[in-house]
Amino acid sequence: MIRNLPEQKAQIFEGHATGNLLGQISTLQVRLAESAGEIEKAQSIRYDVFYREFGAHASPSCQASGLDQDLFDDHCDHLVVLDTEIAGSSEDQIVGTYRLMRKEHAQSAGGYYSAGEFAIASLMTRHKDRNFLELGRSCVLPQYRSKRTIELLWQGIWAYSQRYKIDVMLGCASFFGTVPAAHAEALSFLHHHARTDTSWHIAPVPGRHVSMDLMPEEAINMKKALNSLPPLIKGYLRLGAKFGEGAVIDHEFNTIDVMVVLPIENISGRYKAYYGENAERFAA
Image 1 (tube, rainbow, N blue to C red):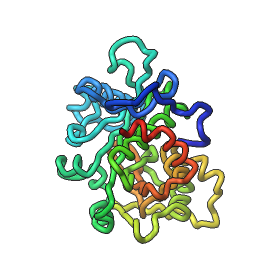
Image 2: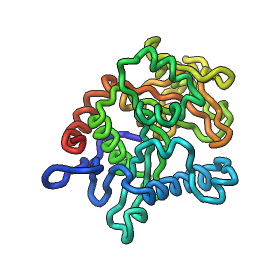
Image 3: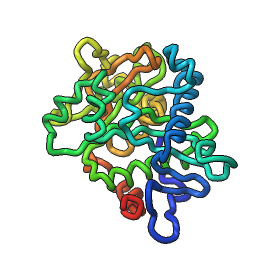
Image 4: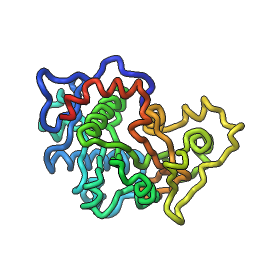
C-alpha cells in the first residue's frame, strides 16, 4: 500500500482545520462522514468493491439494498475520501472509506467486529492500559487506487489517532480467495518474518485457526513473497505492523483473513515524521 513517500504531501488549509476534516491532497479530502447519507454512500462503495468486484456472498437484505452494512456501522466513525472535483453532493464525491472503531464504540456495539475471528479480548486484557483502535472495511473505487489516495487515508487515520490518543491499531486484513495454498509463499513469509512477539500474541478463535506455516523459511523467495502481498497488508508491514498466529477463512467475504497489530510506538520514525507534520492541526 505504501511503497515510498508520495511526491506531493498532504497539505493543510489556510488557518486552523476544524470539524471532521483530517487531511487533503490536491482535490482529494479525507474526513469523517457527517451524515447518514454519507455513511450510506460509503456502504454502497463497500458493496460494489466487496460483493460485485471481489465476489463476496451477499445476504438477501444486502442484495436488496445494494449496501454492505452490519450492526457495527451505527456505532463507528466512518472515514471517507472525497474528490471535490466531482460535481454534485458530498455523497456523490465519496470515492473511498475506512471504518474506525474505538473502545467506546465497541462497548456500545457489544464488542469488536474482529472478535468473531480472532481472540482479541485476551490481547486487550494483557494491555488494558492501552487505547485500541480497530480498523476495518477498507476500500477505494478502482479508478482511485493510487498511492495518493492511500497516503491520504493514512493521513486521516494518523490525525484521528492523535485526536483520540490511540496507542494501538489492529484489525483484519485479507487475501482474496479461500484456498491458503494459493498464497503459500506470502502467508509463510508473514508467519516466519512478521509475527507478533509473545507480548502481542494473538490467534484465531477456537475452531477457526488455519496455519500460515505452509512453507519452510529457507524455501521462501523473499522478493516474490513481498510482491505477492496484498497492497493493504504490504502497507501495514511497511509501517511496522506485525501479524498474529494463524489465519481465518471468511467464506462470506471470500477471503483469508490475518490479524494486524500495530502499536503506535512501532511505526517507523520515517512515517511518524511524515504523518505527524500536519496531524496536530487536523487532530485538534
